[in-house]
Image 1 (tube, rainbow, N blue to C red):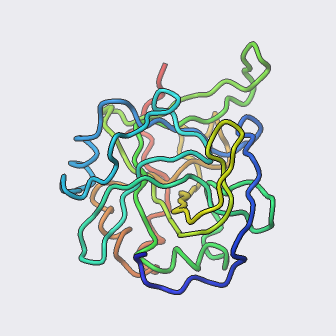
Image 2: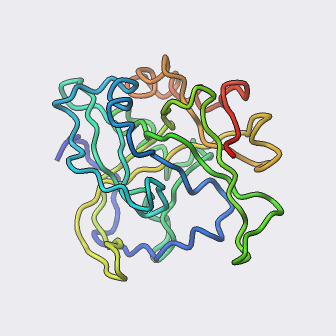
Length: 239
């Protein structure tokens, strides 16, 4: 399977426990919309023949939760971008831990094994993302989600990283499967002025369209400077 690069040593099979997304404080919910596939290809510069999503399963009415499949753009060996499905959440550093969905510690060996190689960086397509409100709760006692999107209501991309992995993951209905997976996560950074009142510690790294190529192909010294908050004036709160 491409890319042909030896991954760092890891156990052949590691189990990742079932995710409990309601209790995690970091951004762990986003939306891919329902009618944005052509917009994704245009924005992310993916030719139609390299759209490998097939019949996209829009689970949860387009909402993406940890340990679910979602559209991701990566670069092929021939330099073309392809749109593929991957599973959200890196394997945990410790066996039986929860999948790791995002990172801010970019220089740790856990992430540098992949972030340092351009072919393992990716673009994670989204229409909106949610952060839990610090005080408001719904009827079930869970924190209410506050949704953020672009002011122009167009799709955007998180700065992502992916890796191949063999292990056990959920396939739904309380069943699991051991096989080879392509897994992704995305970067977080300081929140901007719009996000900070809701989540004071972090927000996803949203790439500017002009920076997609740098993220996908540049040396790490150039790519890592893109891990910064998007300007608040380019975003809105959704009702």
